Length: 86
Image (cartoon, rainbow, N blue to C red; front, side, top):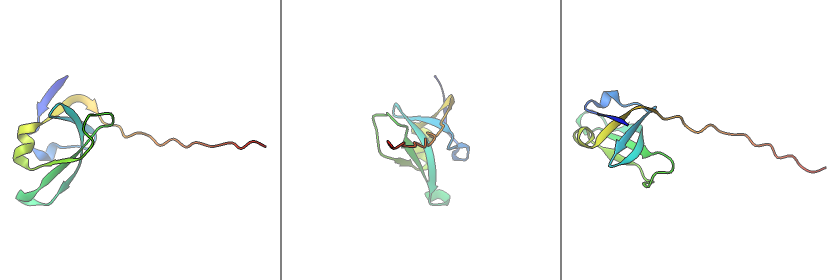
């Protein structure tokens, strides 16, 4: 697994996977603007953490690493048709 530090928040993508404290997360959104921006991440399914975390740009550069070669694909909705007995 190749890891690349995230120094520039402009490179964050919702389709990439990030490793933070040995847990895989996906980037969700940016809250605020300017120097007060917070970058929000949500854990991937089946991870030991279940709540969103947010970082400012300084903490982002220290704790967040991009997992090179892995992309997040949201689960596709499956339509289930229930057939009734006649």
